[in-house]
Image (cartoon, rainbow, N blue to C red):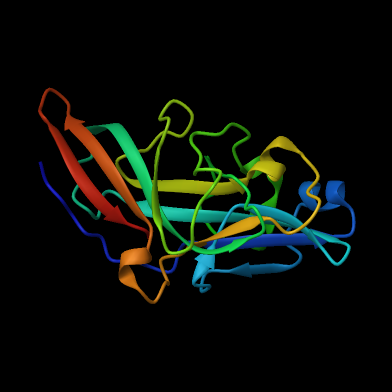
Length: 203
């Protein structure tokens, strides 16, 4: 067994679209509201506020190669760990999906995000508490190079129109408190070899 701590970078972040119609927001080809890699929190979330529908699709990046995972290894299990920054209303379930490889205005487009959940955070969560989600590798494969994990809210994923502000914000890799930053636990085996376990910090 081995544990590796990978330094955080600024490659994770969020893309947000906002329009007066839910269908327009969800189907937008671009993040017309905001795109950032510097916020201290991010999430998959969708909500209605002051007559405007918002959808936030976020990206987490993990560099397995830099952590020492050999190119000829096979990832056999992965678990995402993240801490909640804030809770609004009753919250909204955050799902893990496949994602684009960078935070960019035109990467908000729904076709670039997975439509099938590979795991989800609990429906009820508390601020500053840490939660773990086992990833279904058949729906979100984790390579031995760089892993890109998308966050989508349940309303966005299931095309359910939100009625108010119910959301969770998760601490990002820019969180002031290091213990709140996302991590990815990866178990791998060498081809023909034994299993190893690593702890990766968000990239």
